[in-house]
Image 1 (tube, rainbow, N blue to C red):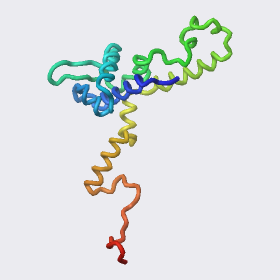
Image 2: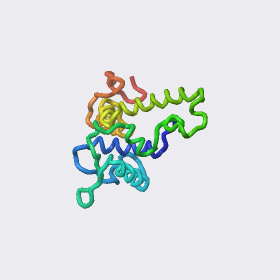
Image 3: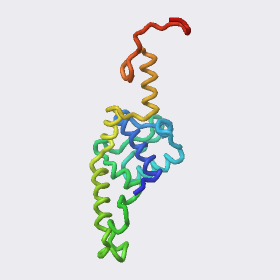
Image 4: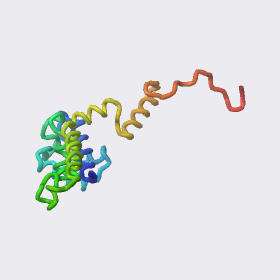
Length: 175
């Protein structure tokens, strides 16, 4: 199974909305900027997610998009199904009628096990889990770099991989 750009970008957009859940609607342009997504593509994704009752939109000042439910109540499987359709590896796992050989296919059992494993992982994970992972130290590279810059600018040594040298600095060429 290969998750398309649609699924990956849509999950990133949902993550951004989950990260700001409870703070009111987010502008689409803000989500696009923070996740480095095209506004045009994001609009199509949010429209699909709205149709699936996963996000709500609000017009006017203070408007934007927000999750329709708390992040802990939205499973990754719901998001990907809304954007990608069925998550099975082959059509005959979801629909026996899709293949004449479904009843006699020796590989169908393997496809079912793999599909069940994928469903298990995606059904067992929520948007809140992704938010928790980010806060636990798995931020995206841009945010990680911003944190490093903030630490460097503040003079903090927290998060540095090597301790600062204790030897006094000297001019080049002198001892």
